[in-house]
Length: 157
Image (cartoon, rainbow, N blue to C red; front, top):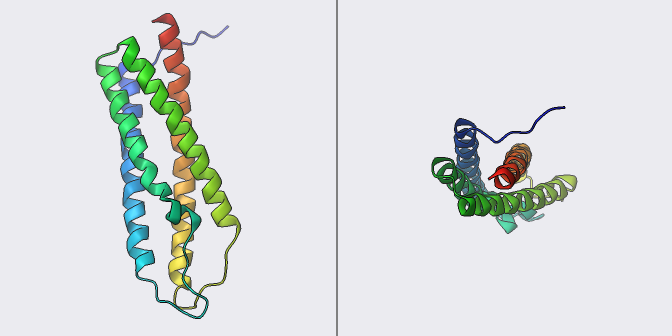
């Protein structure tokens, strides 16, 4: 029978650093989409304004950054209160990631007509959404991993 153990300090630091990098990546992608969609030309069929851009999904990367910083702080100074707060933040990350995945899938499942001048920007924006979809899945897996091992460390605490 396999035994579940706590995450080592090095593993926790790596997970926190990856979360911070994913959050920074999402903020940069939001800025890229902002620059791209603001430059659209109003045409006969209008502009492309995706659902994830309107809701600011990539900007939710701030939550990933905060939870990554909290995870690193918890790895350096493990206390039951810090572990509980890190668990709460990671549960929030899971919820945010699942909502972002659902919104991105909804956005990618339909494509309304846009002006031919904005078609290239719309296609590029959809490719960015596909990339963000994979990183949301990665963030969900990282947060879920820490939640499992964080619960074990609280229990054995």
